[in-house]
Length: 196
Image 1: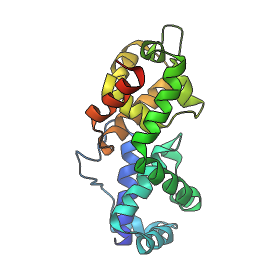
Image 2: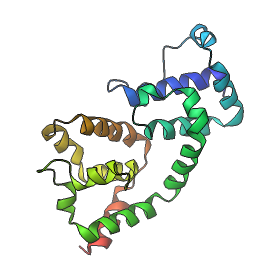
Image 3: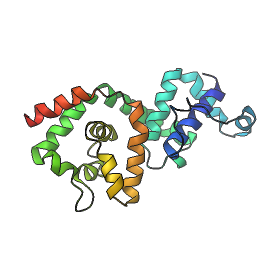
Image 4: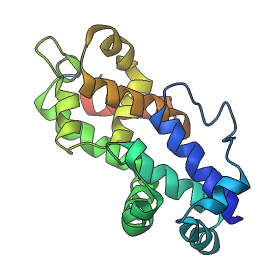
């Protein structure tokens, strides 16, 4: 991938996770960046380096993994990604290669203590599932799968007036199109755990 294309990829993924109105898939990653603006950047060396080190798919996944695992995508800069991003990327790849196993392991642990209804109940503030996520006990991928199975974000969006939830909800919505989830398979995993 040419350095300018790496830069455009970076900008479009950053925008996807930072702005509610921008959709990477809908706009096919298009951005208004110009070669002129790229050449004015002092950090363009990092885009050149990344373009030499990784394939097109790896570059996309590298940026995706880093933007999904930051608390504030607007403030994630290329230097930070280059500095800390490789470990995040490798962990993300590893998780996604064993996602169904991780899901089963996580849900088995949770469903030993709580019912499904209890996991999503938010009548007294954040639900158990959100508290688990905020405590780094479950991954964002698990929330995305659970939302695809139970569409809990719609209800939470209507009922919760909470900036913490707003940022998590946006992250789930923005990440969801990039995860290819076989809902039948994951429903079967839940049934096997609950014996329903």
